[in-house]
Image (cartoon, rainbow, N blue to C red):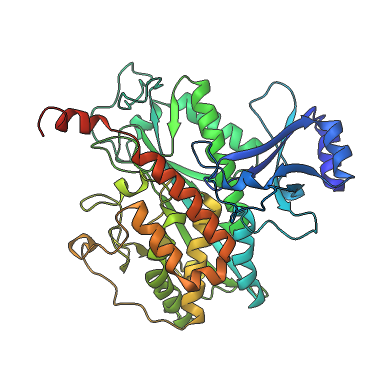
Length: 447
């Protein structure tokens, strides 16, 4: 941990935020003075209750002792020194570091999302392979909304007006919010978050940010920190940034597209293409694995009740697991590329997904396709929306498929699958108790 000590001394850090992503991708952890942080590093580490990882997005805990130990015992946060960064929006010099968690016997906490991704990456490492990913993340800027009963509205830009029409790829539309994005880029640079292009998406004040490709765990960390950065920046400019999958009626949803390829660790050769530029058989197996198993992994890619509002026919989102070349209507798009950059884009995941779990799920499904030497369907030409809907339509259906998948259980572990199921079932039950404004509007006096 010498590098952590050096970082804190060099930057004169006064406070440290120790972060862990929970099941929903929410940052949990502890904040402590820098000197105390360094002292704890020389001891066992910071403690958290194990139940931190089964906290629902509403802040509740499922009443299931099978998920955690009956005593809800302590686990230990161990900072990953490679993740230490400044928190650029504080006046006081503050550091943040992402932590892995371990039990008292030194074994990893197997229901921790970061460990689940590590577990999948170990499967590739044993074969001498390294997955490379490049996420694309969409989100909306909206007016501050103090009453959740009121619909969200686009914010006012520099012109003093709100967007009223479609402005996909509009340069001037993005420039309406220049002060926000200037801060976002500055904050990301200070945190070594490697974002690339910014563009306006089809929705009102909907933005997409692309990340440069790289190591899967490093990119998951970056997306985790980026979402926090964008929300914080927006609030400082008196607007909200939301990564809800479908935040507004009559507007498109927000996705987290994940480009993925596979390279040989020793040579760096892209294993998805042959020397002559053609697709490799391994690439075809990988795509087939996504087609076969991704519907069963949907609670990790579409984790919330709202997630399934995005996956509807006639939208930019996929509704099935077909694949195609340079086809944005399919679940798995293969962009036109050279052999060195051959990849597949998973277009199913929502922006609301935990990046660790969404990437882990995608890589796990591809791995199963390779391990079982599966063959994909023929690529789709034209719109895949004319073909049958084959993804789960609701969270309840997705959880049932997830629980029933033995191959995914073998990769993720029984305890993790159970933990996801308990947490998401508790959230679903909480949602079912809410009576919506649509029901009051259309059923109150008519039925």
